[in-house]
Image 1 (cartoon, rainbow, N blue to C red):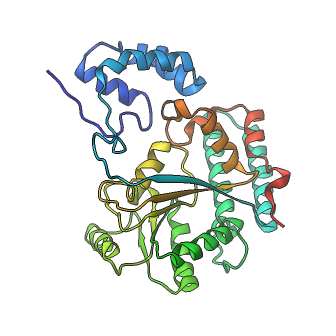
Image 2: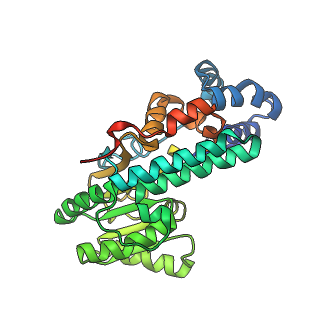
Length: 326
């Protein structure tokens, strides 16, 4: 008999599920080539709901799924509340955003193949940086000031959160943005701010986590999404903020689970920042429409987006009229 044990059966691509099932029941899903042709490509590329349901019917008898929210597993895990935190860009952000779209769409339209895919991902990265803060895109070391609608809304939430005595995990996929935030938040709120990124040594990482879990530990913990998203127990925090979105829900959920896990005694609030009229809002809408299939449709991070047509991509990236705040 064979048993496979996994926390996330499908994180990046459906071939991961094929590998698990082929280990426990060889040949059940056919060869890798047949599986790609019959299931992976239709589901990941075209969001084929019929094939997704067919795959689930085939694999369901062999899968025993348990989640920590199942009362049969643990009956005292507190509630988790997810909040979409909307904000509007400043005039400066909107100007930079439109400049990036104009420049990158011109280059994308003239390219193809691998070069085009690379340019699409580069455009999305730049736009996410603009949404964070102008200085994040420009990398000019300029003052933070009141230049970012996202940061202004974040500061308002942090004021309320700290006043309530709560502690916060702040995730960003950009280490350079995290490094900008730490001194700014420390000065703004006159408090210690912990920081963890991929460059943090193992010994230092252990000490930072230990200090944060202490009753008098830092109130704010800024973490790189990839470095701090797995393997940590941070139940001292009951507030989680995703400052910039990662388009693989499994990665975001794993990061949230640093606080929402067995041992947590308080209700956990999770905020995901979404810029009105921006790329962030468009992709959030796409993920909502396909929520049932999200774990199958979203391939490697954002790479599924690179296959969109130029017209669809233009609609996705173009800034809406209501994106700018007063």
